[in-house]
Length: 264
Image (spheres, rainbow, N blue to C red):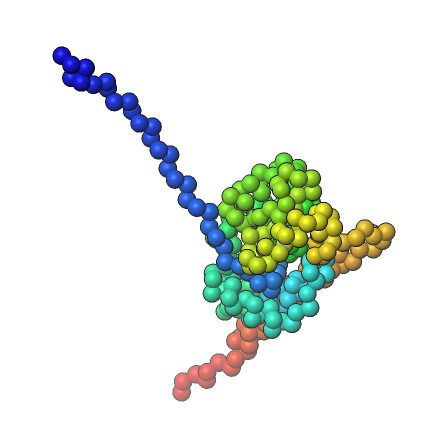
């Protein structure tokens, strides 16, 4: 019998691993849209009462123009903020709540970006301040969601980078590595990458306004930040009280309406 009559048994072929779906590409956000979404997430995470969030237009406007925890500082009108909400509503990223005495606004980002609270805090901080070193980002985002160590932040960043929600502007392992959010326009992102490639991270951040120079009056700046935070909270509480008073006045008006005379 020839050798061809007894062919060797076929070797089992390895099962190909399922192809990983490509990471999504996110539609860019304008600076105003980034600020609005960052404020909505920040206030949702830091508000101390149900009356403070969702935000009234006045509270959202105050948060957008806040001088602490913002870069750049903006000088927006309430109409700017109101108009800036419209494209976010169309894309489902934020919602306008009507039906009460005061319109209110909230974000829908847990349905679109991530359901992880710490990941959302990191994204909000990047939307509010732009590019940051990992060390600064951990400290700043921790005011919204605890991130105890740089290792914990690294784990969060790995998940966000995999979804292209966060982008490294420098080599990830470089000392003082800088990250940003994934919602820049391509031209803007290319300029940022070129800028950080040609300058040390600290100098590059200072050039784009991402880091303030050291100040001897640190206590004063902290006091100003604390006062601004209290002011924003007071505005939210005042809006909530106004809504309650309006509801009580409406209810009282119904009670005071004269009853119909009895039928003869």
